[in-house]
Image (cartoon, rainbow, N blue to C red; front, side, top):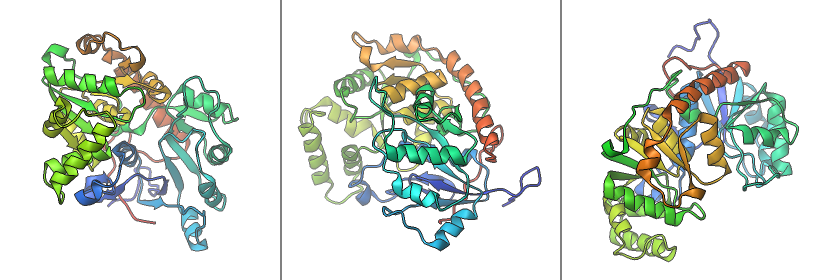
Length: 401
């Protein structure tokens, strides 16, 4: 592989904090339960985090990648610290790190022993509605260290910027999330399709969304009556159990199925073995353990809707129109940052999907995407992060630290 940039400079050696899943050869990022159904049926995995990690690696241009895993006691050997100091920079994978529950002291303790730049690559806030308390002391110290070690912090939107400003961090740039830009295109062009012309639709499931279970059940049932509907699972445990039991990829699959149905019935998501939603699960539920498989599935759809921030965004990144359902400060911030069409889940009385879809403004998204692409480019360049925006996404190079 050529490790020299067009300018003649050597490609950087980089580290990643908070990697999600692992890099598997030419496939890209996969979950830790990839190709292991027996293990998968016992562990919750959020493949949305893998989307962000995989997309970050496609955007960045680098020679070697070193995942950094910090033990709970924050103790790394001097040899490990020296190895980190030999890197050109570390980046923090984007996620909801601006919150009041962070336990960052072990990582902060390690970073304080290093001297390399540390760059936040698309982080965001997650707080209750109307909260003015954004971080605890552990999170504040960690974010301040990142601010001191980078030119700017890359964040999801204005609320995230406000949260950082509230603790004195002003060097912030808004661009959204790396997943939107994973194909490195300066613009996206989405097909326009009326609701009446949709044949196959994907629903991004987020079952454990407080206060929105009944709404999700309603949407799934009604969409399935009108369209060929694929339920896109991001890693919910019981759904994985049903999927792997249905396809007989696990031992004692009948028992695994019965146990999963009993659990979902006890949680009042299903209403017993005759619930039509269970029939839909058995015919149309899809589980993915790699980003590329989720992406390929969405590329075959006419449209996507649902509650998964990253599941919907991956569709848009592949120029498949997606209509968000927002349900918290995080999703509402995000759709505003990128101009994404959405329905506010708090106000969906007498809801018509067809009407909402046909009124969706994808022109605004396309225009806003171009603007945010420019902001992402500025962010990467002002932080001296070599990138492939406007070019072919980078091949993935991994070497365990």
